[in-house]
Length: 182
Image (cartoon, rainbow, N blue to C red; front, side, top):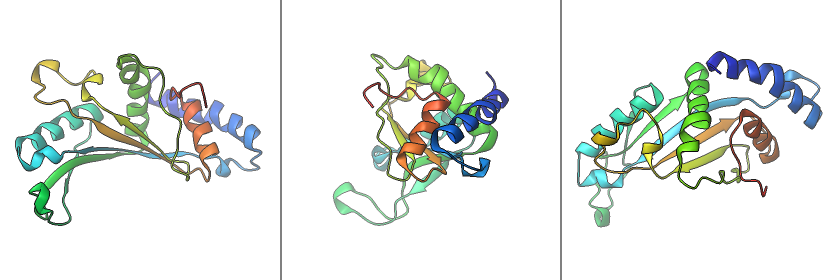
């Protein structure tokens, strides 16, 4: 299933199902996936500056888009942190790249997690969902030989849903493997 197919799947199958389930009167009321934000916080980058470059190249390989380096907002002496020091990287995916990344995440990356039993089904109250991944090596784009440090990331799915129930239904229909107990 290519990117166009995921989008086609949304318009042909997911929209009618959600309209029927929630009783929407217009297609415009149906929640839509607006963007996917991938964030990698690198507190260890305070001591090792090369970690930022490694994270930028890895996230660029995973998403196909150049990440933005995030900077600290204030000084925190206990963490040896100064204002405007690089402490993370992030990427915002929209449109075609978003659907392409979602496809690879669901079909390739998540099944590679050891002892995978599904992802937790708690949303944020506004229909958005954040998935925490502990190892970047689940993505096939990462070369295992060039890994210097195992780093995790947060993947946030931002939807136009008004409630958690609507957001959950949308993400479940896209194929996110939520745990069965919800």
